[in-house]
Length: 208
Image (cartoon, rainbow, N blue to C red):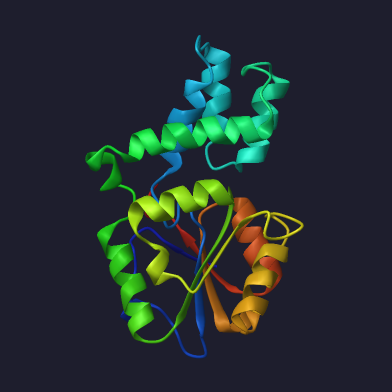
């Protein structure tokens, strides 16, 4: 598996036989992990060394798993999962109203790559373990919808990453074979999902 610390250009990619390029969202397409961490800290009014360590460990973890771990450690109030997501999204919206934060979310070179992929008629998709409401919030704020042929978030498949089903659903909806697809992922669970689905996987380290 190839790993990239720098965002590639179109010419850097081996695109022979490729019809679709698929991105994970948090930590791959978006430099948003820090916002997830900030939002989680909001739920812990009196942080301790233990809570700080746990929140750090939850960086890159899907929202449902983060919620369940914080709840099991009694670090957040007894909220329902939907209430947790609503409150977290309120914080995201607040953060993204700051123009300086908004500008850091998508690297200009990555946006340029996506635009060039679209110009060359490649299919571009997103597969994320984030909730649909969270995904829509980020995409609407950042004006990204026009660049993507397909957007799949948590709930669009019966199983989530590391299961390959989200990617298998993506390829089916795009009418492409897995081996005709390149997937950019940054996390172990995402890489496992995309690899198990049969795609060509590139580990994205450019926001690390």
